[in-house]
Length: 484
Image 1 (cartoon, rainbow, N blue to C red):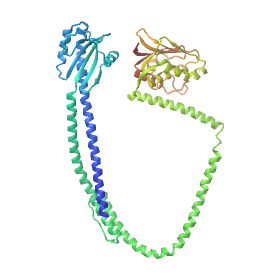
Image 2 (image 1 turned 180 degrees about the horizontal axis):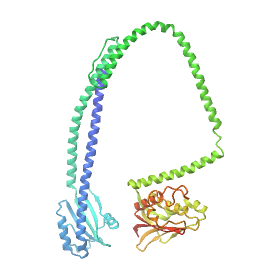
Image 3 (image 1 turned 30 degrees about the vertical axis):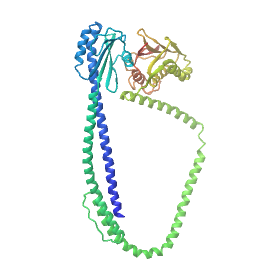
Image 4 (image 1 turned 90 degrees about the vertical axis):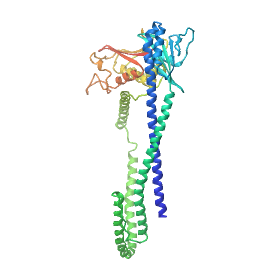
């Protein structure tokens, strides 16, 4: 049975080592392959973006002047890259002007592609990867003028071959690592299991009554210390055996006395333990329902302070996310008035009513629907409305939604509060900055609300404009980049 035990231990070590090595090799292969393939894909994408950007620069003036021959020359230059499959030059009306063969197209052939529409809208390179190609669209622009777009198809056949080659190389490296690791693991396992087998054999002999058994292990580690301790233990067991035989008769004689002693000491311990349990329960029942008066008010203060602390923590966490760039927005089409402004007005209505401040909403446009991250834009207006009410004692709060002369959507929050000094406005959106400081300041807060407003506004592609006069009021405008 002893042989079976330590053979099993050896097998277990080998199995665990193999599993560990396989996990390490697979992890290395997958991670390294993914990293290398990601680098390859990024390189291919960057090459394609560089080529389409070069072509856009070379094409813009010629397209504006309708110099199609010059455009064809630019295309021929770019098509020296053998990975380019097709190039299309498209005008603002989605008409193909020059196709992949560099021919001037006189027909009314049009192209309809969602990527093209996004490229026109965002004025940026838009791309997607199909099975065989990278498809890129880039607007052709001159200052303040959109002329058309370029469509470029970039072959990824070589990318597939490169990715396969990377996988094969990493598998080869993984196999080498596994073989070398297994050899070292086997040597290490033998170093551990052989002394254990020796210890197991010696333990069996001692258990059979051989107290003269000694073992010698020279591993210069804990196993050698264990062997020395085993030898000392065997010697002490031999001495203790003799003492135990001599004490056996005395032990039998005192067995009755021992039994009586144990019964008495158990009773003595049980009594104070019961008393402690009973009195603890009595004290709990006595004071459980005595929280009244000032104690009850204290809990209300604790609750208010907790809410304020939680709000401060949320602000700190949100600002930290923004500063580290870890906040992940989810953009959707948001009705700003119905989904954000009006719910917030209801939320802050009690605070406004306490000061008899009317909150007036003015809608200067028929609709106000933008591509926004609802959570962050709600935080923007929550802080602005809260500040407007907090710093205004009389007058009104006015919220205006409309479009400026450039067709950009804007919101404007106007209050008749204490205002902001001109010299403090440049520092208004810095974290932990407050115009009123010290223990005597009138308003609570840690100076993070407006820092959060600025960060979340930038995430939603919006700019902030502040106009303020001391003791007259403040106007804060949020201008969105999106136009009608």
